[in-house]
Image (cartoon, rainbow, N blue to C red; front, top):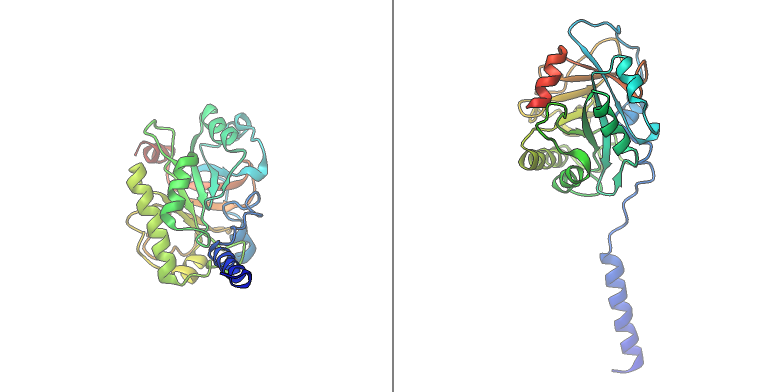
Length: 262
């Protein structure tokens, strides 16, 4: 083989390798992505409910952008449960996760972990496994809530992650099915009604299997996504008396304890 032919062959091999190498996923916003950031940006804030709603249990959710949380103060301010961001996609773990997740537990707050979904970077099953491996599991100790899937507007591009409703529904099913198989609990699904309608075609598929954690920043819960006749948790405000986002569990504290116990 002469040098010209050999050189052309080498260039062809190099080009094939370059084409076959996938683009590195963008996690540049992961430190500031948390449950509801994109919902507030796309849907706005339309007021807050009363802080004394009957038969509702107050809680909150936090993520790494808030830094270390004073959990003793949060418990003193009325926090009964908390969700902590654990992971995003398959390439980011909340650097504050240990302080936040373990700190909530030490303060007597029932806590759980959530995963910021990235259907644009990998499959649902792969992300469920990554979440479980990095703090998103569950144990029957009576103080750990099942994990939650935060599925909302894409902060990196197309709001539905470049997927049609059927494919995005299949992705969510892949995640929740894997989580259930590995952890033996159904994951909560965190979303908004407007996003769910737009990006899943308002599928009713998960209403009988996965509890709903609904985001809506207004005086009432409003319309629910198809398939659910009630929400388990309502994220009702971006800020308030507790660190991070403000939430109500739909029922007395005993219901929160029952969800933790399984």
